[in-house]
Amino acid sequence: MDEQDGAEEEHGDATAWRAMLRVATPALVTLVVVSGLMHATLTPYIIFTQKTLSDQGAGTALVSVVISAGFFAGGLTPLLSDRADRRIGYRVIVPVSLLTLAAALGLSGLGLVWVTIAAFLVLVGIPEITAVIVDNVFNEAVPSRHRASLLSMIAFVESALIGIGYLVLGALMDGLGSSVGMATYAAVPLLACLLWLPVLFRGARVTTEIEKPADRKAS
Image (cartoon, rainbow, N blue to C red; front, side, top):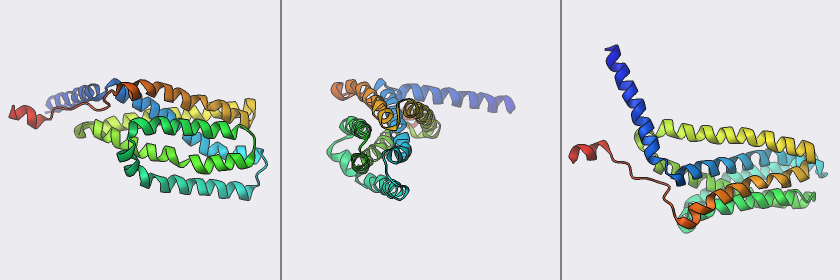
């Protein structure tokens, strides 16, 4: 019984890896990396904006209001994700979000507190819409039988890139100053945008049709 259970478990693991390889189209792998870089930009940007605003002369009360409003916008704008997906589609909205993040970081680098506030409030919500749309793409691309394990691998990649993003942005802000460090970090979303351009212009498929066991039995 133990040998049989072990064999079934080994077969299940092999099946999971085969399923992952079958859905891992170049476009899907690119989307995973690009999505991770987007999160690695957005999350540290939201957190470190507090220090940037303080260094630019904003008081604690103003910083708290701005960050609170930013989180409110970040929670409200994803409600528009379905409409954005139907009208624009993830292929276009991904680079749009990356460019808005780069613009927000660049504007923060000007060192003008009200420009930083305006950029933060206007632009912080757009990547949140994209995050919901991309998560939906991942759910559709991964076969349901192995979805939990494969999506956890995608989440790990994003979390690892977010952690690296904190370290990089923190080092840039310490070494160059908060404003210039923010502007320099705009290279990350721009790099992600460049990685996405081949998928955007070639129209490569992110998802791959997965043959279901029932289909195989029927055939």
